Amino acid sequence: MVTREVFEKREFEYLSPYAAKAAGSRGRKLPEEKCSIRTDYQRDRDRIVHSKAFRRLMHKTQVFLAPEGDHYRTRLTHTIEVSQIARTIARGAGLNEDLTEAIAMGHDLGHTPFGHSGEAVLNEIYPGGFRHNVQSLRVVDVLESGSSRRGMNLTFEVRDGILNHTGSTMPVTAEGQVVKTSDRIAYINHDIDDAIRSGIITAEDLPKESIAVLGDTHKKRIDTLVRDMIENSSGRPTAQLSEERYQAMDELRTYMFRNVYHNDKVKRAEDVSQVRNIIVSLYQYFLEDPDRLPDDLRAMRGSFPDAELAKDHIAGMTDRYAINLYEELFVAKGWR
Image 1: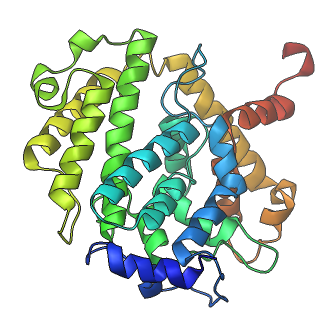
Image 2: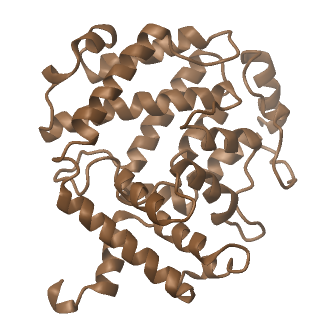
Image 3: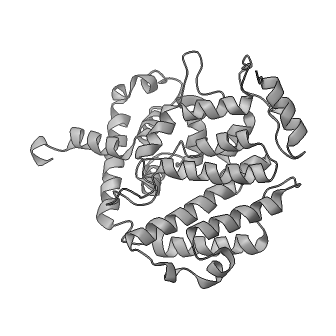
């Protein structure tokens, strides 16, 4: 039988000296008895994958609102693609694949319904603003509670990687840094794929300088970036791309913001207006009558402000649940 102690020993024997080791984790907020089989990072990954918040990602928008087609990415397929890319890099660079996977699987748990359109509305109406990475940490720290604890009680390294997968602060582990870059590799390239599929852009429209460096197909670009990340992270305390590949990827990202993410065909005015109406209406409804919140959130009243709990409920909804609830509460039956 391969026990936790065997896995922990192998990490010290085979991983890079710069890799995070489960036995050397800064630990959990609340002490727990160790699992006899899984390391702490493996256990964190399992808690995330078995959570309700993870399952809900399946019905949350990635970029395209209500796309007409079966093959557009959702927030869940994005998460899986990030995990695959990040795990490959971690394995090639001798880093801790279990920690990498745990961070990748949990990084977007706090995303709102309707993608970044929903996030923008919550950021506007919730006092103090809304950031999905901060909400992801709140999901694992507070909202996904077990029978005997509040939150998942994850290790410091996983929590740090989730919080800092976006923004200016770098994760403290090389594994977290791998996920931060893998998130960008994944969304830029799969959003190009979806934008071409939708007819918003063509492959010939992509900036030629970037394509010359990274490759002219989805497969080539990801392969180039993964190999570059491994080469520039192996045997080093930090994980990063080479300057040339980073600049080429950043140019692609700029192109996507200019031509896809802010494109009126992607975010049609009527769709954005409807998203705003749904989120604002539901937020005000639960803020004015918090007794209508779900039992688990209602039980937290007194520990957290009603506005925060209303925000938590809205952020946790899937697209279709938010639409159906809005119609149930605010649309006359004869008009549905």
